[in-house]
Length: 278
Image (cartoon, rainbow, N blue to C red; front, side):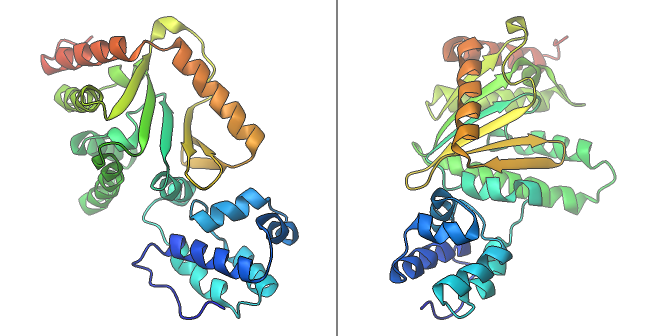
């Protein structure tokens, strides 16, 4: 039986998942057999064990009852659920940190993993015009911390499709967008990311409804995430993930090639650097 409580400073969700795997196997249950009384799939249990999904308190109580773990998961569920991100994005952000591959379509803004400090600050200030500076500072720090995922030279694979509107939407200072676009170009030229631009000339496309993020993992089923204004949904249903994957594939087919996309990104950045963008 699991013993002492988890240390919240030591990736509590991953540790909780590891303990769940040990307790389940000790009870002689497969992932599907544990999922059945919880009315979830075996793949969902696998995601809990891999740390890519959050264990909610109701699940924790039922798991303690089923596995006879004497309240261990109930006690530790709170520590594993703590997040510095908004509730609607917390699960996606934590899954993102474990992903082997991330593919993202951005319809309006540069993806969070690619944002510069100045760009992120302008975005947050636009969304929170009356917030104290320290609140904006914390939001910026948390966003830049996510970008540390790309500090590894190879993992995860990051592939983004940027709507052309992302390249054209500037704040008060055009130099901020120019710097942000140059940052994307540097990452692409160093072969750290794959970036494509979906041009206005492409007309209507498969993702007119909004942003999509796809995530795949070494030891857990893939996930997809769709986001709206202050809302977000994380999907593990295979049919839904497959549909979102097809949507992303259609976007890449309609987008400019990575080489032509890079040329456009750098051209627009140069326009903004000279404040000549119309």
